[in-house]
Image (cartoon, rainbow, N blue to C red; front, top):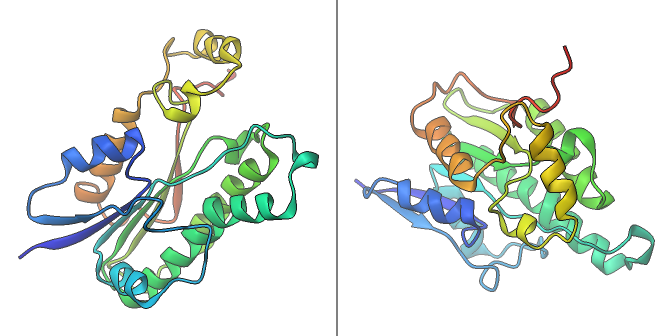
Length: 215
């Protein structure tokens, strides 16, 4: 019997590697941004029905802006909030209500811990962390986890950044002396959803190579 997986942000490198790991007995639904406009929170019936029937949900979609906060208009801010925060919460709420055995993993960011040059992005990630920690699951078979990676050196967001010196400095100061790869994030998502005990829930897992260690 085939089971169903929903992957948002499937065109990202995390989503790409993740889809290659999924067993063949799963139906993978990975709608493109043109098909699922996650800046629009008015989900139609087909979208809601798809969310309801998915046993595993991996929320990998995000958007970040290089524009300074005071130069953003209301529409730009609302769009960012909807994509980075409110759409994820809505998908989780639908799934938790209707699927007693759903496993949900959200890809957050270390920006939820330390902030970001993009204020809306950083606050959205911090809010997702808090939501995951505080949102009580409704059935004992459910799981809700956020993983918060540091800079993913082969990720599209990183490759588009202009402050390459800051990236190299961060890698140099990291105890691991290297950056994080998207495939590593995908593997962790897979392991948490397919292999880890479902007793692990309502937690944020930071993946940063120990960069905040001080002792």
